[in-house]
Length: 149
Image (cartoon, rainbow, N blue to C red; front, side, top):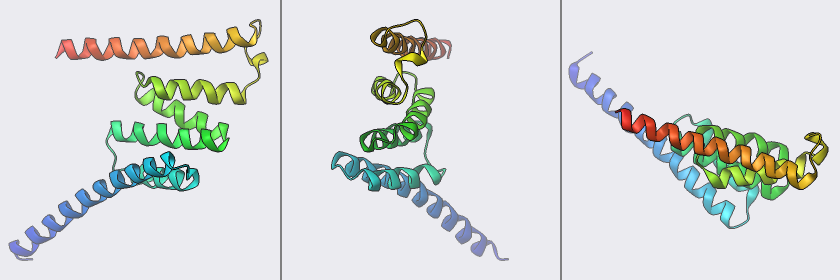
């Protein structure tokens, strides 16, 4: 195969790969618009498409999971919201919005009796503090890693 054909093939591959990432980002941005306009099913579909592309960088992936979780939350699908919001929380422990949404989803799904020995308000307060402690630990870890470089 002539070198010129190989180079054209390589260039086409690079362009198509870049386009796939751009399309995944476009899907994520369109998903956010759908979420903000109240079209939760369409938002979920667009965020799912972006996630399933496997073309998103870590921060963009966290964005897609957090916002798909919010769409599920708005629809009342608390189980799916919990899964996605927890993925977002683990990917970016300092995302306070995702953590707050996770607490809302958990409080809607789990009875207060799920945390024995604590009254309902204390149970959810304890969960909120645990998530906040995890976020703080994530920020401190990030700062330490940044200082080590």
